Length: 172
Image 1: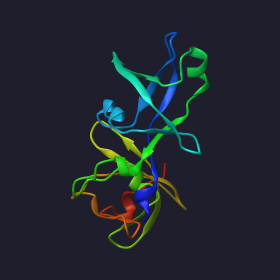
Image 2 (image 1 turned 180 degrees about the vertical axis):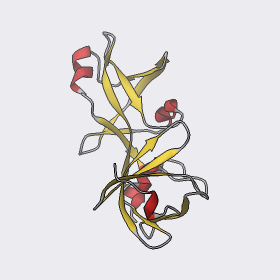
Image 3 (image 1 turned 90 degrees about the vertical axis):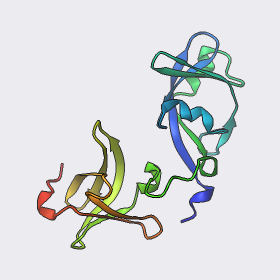
Image 4 (image 1 turned 90 degrees about the horizontal axis):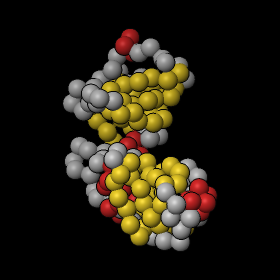
């Protein structure tokens, strides 16, 4: 699907921290500090490269010092922009494991062939991840539990097959 050349969102900036240009970071990686394993960070539509000078965990918060960002004003100017990395910098997932960004946009069909729509986003819950699917009938939530509800993920074919009867579905 041409995914090897793509960039992937791994987090976002979350405002300045301190007076020396440090920036708070929200990480979409698991564990959260893994965001610092993937470099260089790419910013904006043109993919400007950002160099990490230092990072630290301050309580539950992650903060980073970027090369060339030396004041709170410069840190503020980053806004809430997303942090991207080249997909090629991520490790290949184990068999049966998937990156959420690979699931976004896939069509979801049940065993009877009914299409619920396409994965709009993924949600993390305490018990398991959940597919949020947007279709003609509205939004449908289906637990992403392989072997129980998720029968097959075909990334090349652009489809997820689920064992989720139509009568279980009430659009949100």
